[in-house]
Length: 146
Image (tube, rainbow, N blue to C red; front, side, top):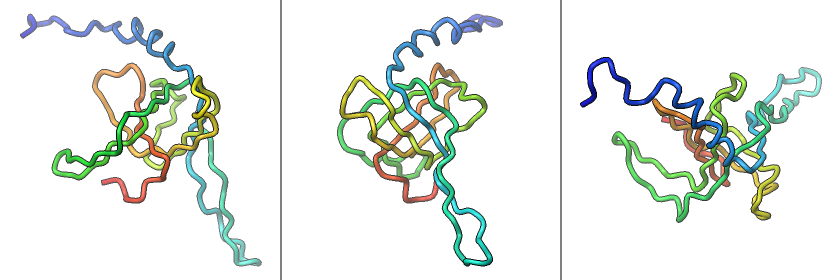
């Protein structure tokens, strides 16, 4: 147990280690909100689909988590582990990633990765954070977030 009035994690811990973590982000991605329905045209009766809205383009780390998506349970809820982990900077200019967002891989060291589209399936949170981790899959999420 720590001494009273003593911090285990130094207040400048993140600024000290964050540059190292950001240096591991060798891929370039674009995060976007998915396409959505526009306003119905009263003349044609058609409702246009609006294109995805990008909110971040920049450095990231994209890696396979290994294995298939094993099911498990957390807090009595069934969960699937996303097969990809996408690490992005914590500060995305005020944007907040959400389940269903698009991850387009623009460039990466692995020649099989660019031009892949992934879908955010989970956005875990943490009390100590050096990067924002996003669980992602090749397929869009099909169930509502619970």
